[in-house]
Amino acid sequence: GAVAYAAYHPHCGFHVFLEYVNFGMSYDPGDDAPEESITAGQWIDALCLAVLRDKARFHGEAFHFARDKFAAQAQGTPAGELVTGLMAVVLDDTGDDEEYPPSGQAKLAAVDAALGRVR
Image 1 (cartoon, rainbow, N blue to C red):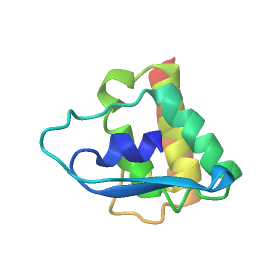
Image 2: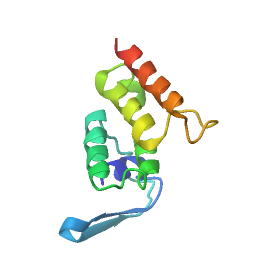
Image 3: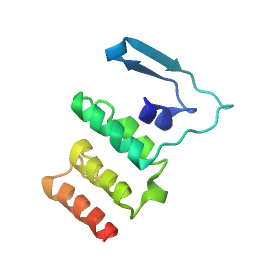
């Protein structure tokens, strides 16, 4: 829910549903609402939960757009670069729209570049 909220609110309408408690909420787009944010740590926590539920690719777009909320501030930090590596390995998003799906070598290059920025 936090990733979808950060990715889409207030620009688009979306629905968040939690199966384990059988509860969901809908959010409508609105200009009067402040833009939401998410931290790299919250993003990683949400991705781990999505992977455990086998829903990471299903929610890939939300993870992509939510990452934009913290990417500039997190670049070069361990958490920010972990997100970059997870995007490449888990979501097939290396940042290169020309090569999709990315090859194994392209994914490895994205992870290696992220490691280089941390060092």
